[in-house]
Image 1 (cartoon, rainbow, N blue to C red):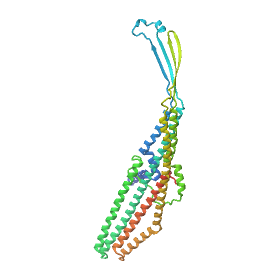
Image 2: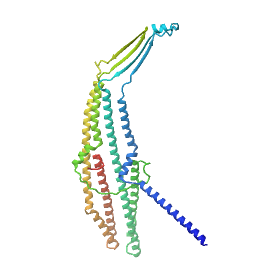
Image 3: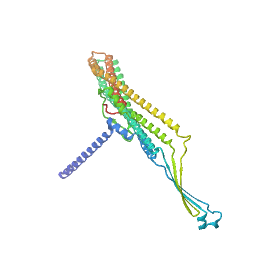
Image 4: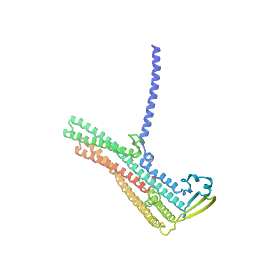
Length: 431
């Protein structure tokens, strides 16, 4: 029996170690799964920049533009020509060496188009300038995507906060309903008051259901921006609604926007691209020279000949394209100015939105939140002691809930206004 007990103890010990190892592995796997399903705002932005199909499609425009640079830098191909004349196909009897030397003619030549006016360099300049514009436009698409991710992320934070508050409120009110049931049994409250509290419980349960739906929708919208295959279905956000006052001056933000915003930069680079197109149009107005050399063998004589050909620019001097591209330069300059004014307007609107939201948040924090909490607590205590009416308690509860939900919405609006300001300036870090 002792031997069997010893073996059983050994087996039990082995089983315990195996169980402990299994538990550790499961905990580790759960921790890994949790770490991959919860992300911060910076991680969400990185995932979106990496996985967005729309952004990937926009980035291919840069490669296409660089390929056009290769095309623009190509030189004209030389031409090779040859011919043979007076071949006696219809009189085969004449085929002989004498006929080859005395009658037939052979020509072989090579030609090349000499581009005048620096066309190749102008093409390269125009293609490179267009690549710079495309790169800035892709950066602007990234700017828009970052704001969209931040917007959905803040929406997810708000939904998460509202759900937590709704669950806590439901838990507290259920305790009140339970207390009322005990008081009803003891004869301290009427059946009407008990039914009213139970009916009011439905509102709390509805709030929880609505908050859960809002959270699911917010996470789904965020996952769409991050990439469905990049994060799990139940991806959640890390963070909380918080208030960070803005202390930077408007003038500094406007200067940063003119310096950093990709769409402003793209419009400014568009002026250089338009000037390059004008220079190319002028270069295309220069007529190119065709040069060729021919070797001829005829009647036992070997000869060479040089040929030169150039169009006479009597009518077509590319004047229409030159005029068009000249207007294009003016258009690009005006577009750049419009982009700068749009950036300044965006910064001003976003800045004022931040200031307004800051004032509202500070109003809540100055005492309204505390007053709503104290009013609810005092009325709840008085009601439980029989010193306050049920309607007064329910009214205080509604005021507290509406104040808390409005405060959370104000925090989210402030955070979103900060993100709008970042988008308007064109940088993630406000100077």
